[in-house]
Image (cartoon, helix red, strand yellow):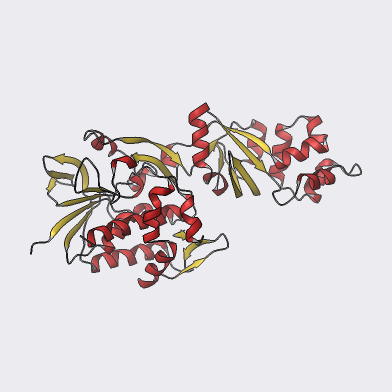
Length: 397
């Protein structure tokens, strides 16, 4: 019996997992990648340490996603524990770091992880064709531009894994969206997620503190609170503590062109304990902040830059500012500087099997769909879960 053919367009994490798991006894499968090699964003994400997933218990893990109802069935089929077992089977051992994030064992480089996945794919007899940029449809054929020619492909099934709109140098530029709009498929404009957020710093403060960190803090936007650290940049703030608040911040920015951020500089201390220390009239306020409260210089500088002299010298007002320091966020970093984006194909356009409602036998996976997650391994996990989930669907046909 002649095998059905599957064309995978894109070579990111979700596509690679799908290709590794698809049953090639049933299907003839080819990946079409526009770059010189697959997995470029995977490698860029691993620069400085490849955070593959998170060790959070599965029951809580799924709640990190927006919308979590979309991710839940994918994650339940292939969760973070399953991913670690899967990696172990291809001889990539992992460990849980102090931040509870999961990384390859020390000494295993990101390229080695990628090569192990590619080796599983090639052993699965999936063909990888690089330097094939998808340009749209030519009647019933898929059209690809190569270095020397234009190629037309007719496949029984098509799996799109075209990525979002961040890090264009890796191939994720979002230019594919217009091709789907032409097919009357609803899309959502891309927005930066897990990105830097803009704050109009006082000039004197940023001149002295750019590149420094606000450490051991808790950041709040709306009802969300995240502990961690923040990097002070000329644009504003970056770091895990604000990335996790991206959805709330974007919602406020859309509603009123600004977002309210509160920073607790001493999350382990009660307001009353801080005020008591600051009420010691035998010591200078600056000395109490530095030595008794162990506050780093950037935090003290921030307080001095925003508070009036009277407020800074008031134990009550200063304590309140230390526990809930307000900052106005006025925008995001550019799309291409974001770690990830939200937007793309509207989730209402795909069914439970990730198949496009208006284009039967065409499927979408990965960051090209409109879902969101914080950094910390959640992004890669969802991509791997999605690829595994769709492969399972095909294997059951």
